[in-house]
Image 1 (cartoon, helix red, strand yellow):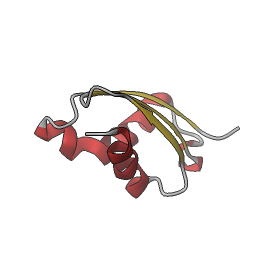
Image 2 (spheres, helix red, strand yellow):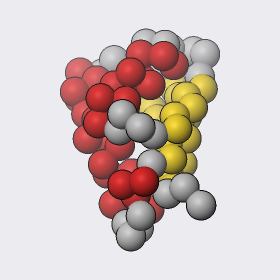
Image 3 (cartoon, helix red, strand yellow):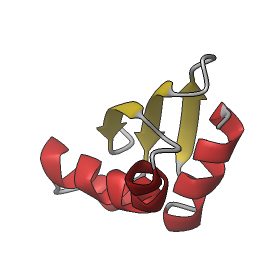
Image 4 (cartoon, one colour):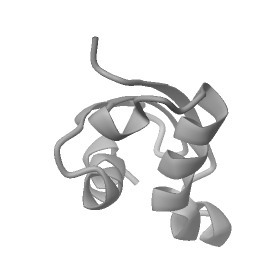
Length: 74
C-alpha cells in the first residue's frame, strides 16, 4: 500500500476532510484526519470512525499499522 491508497480509503467516508498520510515502507503509516463530523466526538469515537474506513485492508493484512491523529476543525 501507498499513502495515497490509504487517503483514498479514508476519503470515501470523509469526502470533505483534510487528510495527510505519511509512510514509506508499505506497511506502517500515520494519518492526520480533520473533519467537521468529529465535532462533539471524543478521540476514541473519531479514530474508530476512521478505522472503520480502512477495516477491510487491516483485516486482510494489507495495512499493518496506522497511527491516527484526528480532530475537528478549529
